[in-house]
Image (cartoon, rainbow, N blue to C red; front, top):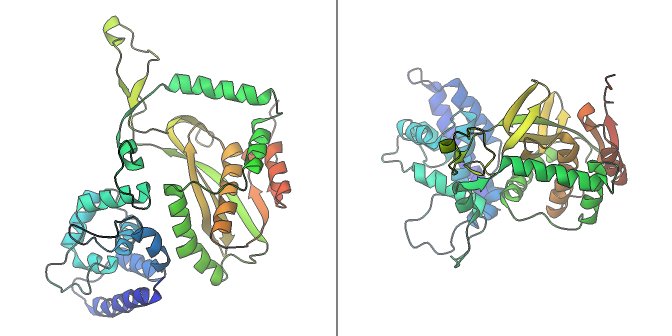
Length: 366
């Protein structure tokens, strides 16, 4: 980790901000100022080792953009509300100040500022997903390539299989959460898979959670109080898929044949808050609430059909492993949940890990 690089970036931004804030013409936008101040307080250098490992050790083409600057640029893109690379690349090239804030240039008066193309951002996302660089191997398909391939899925069959698995579990256990508790405890010594989620979790811990803890924002690290809850996340992908059968030619418009879907993990679920069915995922996170702010510790995602009953213990298991693998001997003391977590298996899992559950009781309707 090279903290001097972040100090150099910080000094450069402060020097430029001093000049920008003095200007009356072309005044710095308030949203840009807020985003810049946010990035000034995030040292991304601890993630450099993880990000540089995504590239080949010897570059045969043009030198790559600094991966830390690429990651910072993605954060800036989200802070400013952009949702596609095409618009973001155009904005970077139109306003040199954004290139300076990202770290691609020293000042906005610099001529011919070299900023990434649309393809460079897409390739950076692919590298994050694929993990540490590997030489091409025959027969090996990268995760990013699998994501781009539309695959045949039969949502009806997937739903039936899930019901069968649930019934099989209930023949042995009182509930699905009790089976999940035993499964997690049986594999508690297994490390996390080296996938995209692990890399993002490690970057979050190294660049945000540890600095927050050092500033005292997480409270007593020997007795952390967590709060966890889930939310519905609708996908932009089509829930109907692309038919490959000839049922329509036979006048059958509501068939249950396999179809091509662009989202490989989304399915149908129920949003109890809005009381609607939706196609997408369930987002779940653990946070530490301090001074009126919620600091995320462990976000995760599952299919829409998965509820808080199972996502909560899975996510807590990942959080415990992530802290341990990053050399943090922190102790979780309390876990606060709503009535959507009122299940025997969750109580037992928390108590077995010396965590005191604080869960609202489910209302029983008669």
